[in-house]
Image 1 (cartoon, one colour):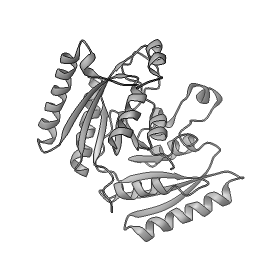
Image 2 (spheres, rainbow, N blue to C red; image 1 turned 45 degrees about the vertical axis):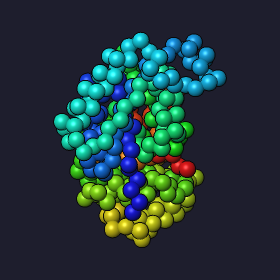
Image 3 (spheres, rainbow, N blue to C red; image 1 turned 90 degrees about the horizontal axis):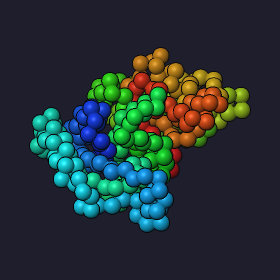
Length: 282
């Protein structure tokens, strides 16, 4: 199978959370034999964002007054990678000016990264240096984004949950097979249906099952739940099954149920106990 993970982009803000995420990045780099690129973004004000919207959203760190300190902090993180993961891991760094999401999207488009690794977004808003939107990054950059809770690891993935709705999610299945082939993993295809979508969901659930069986030796099972909200159903199922990873599409599949949840932009990546890999449908 084609190697899907070659270059990981890891945004960092030098907080303790960033160090935890970096440990998970090292796990991925070792597991899939890929490189790590550390990115720090010097954020700009809303007024600067508007002014820069007509041009490039990022500026090389060479124009910044504190470039030496920022570069020093990144070098310390690179040393941490070598200590924990070994000197064979290729590591690069960038410091750019702009807004986190836009800089990441630009970086992915310009450098063809295969994966963006971020920490789980907090449920309660607070003072944060780095605020990232996994749905936006995955949808606009067409790159998988994995959101990892600080207490979870990315080794020994025994169960992967992939929701199936009213279409065949080829990209999700491809990544599911790829990841599962590196572990002793069972893929659980979860058909989320309602009265209107039942026939379509069953059709694509069976199609997805056969696709995995015909193109891999990965263990796969089918489950079905009735729900009007995909994210809520997937979150509950993953919790009950003690899943190790969820793979879903941005948008409808990640929006948690409830009017206020929708208005506040609450997504499953905030609430999920296992890591969530967000992948655009196309």
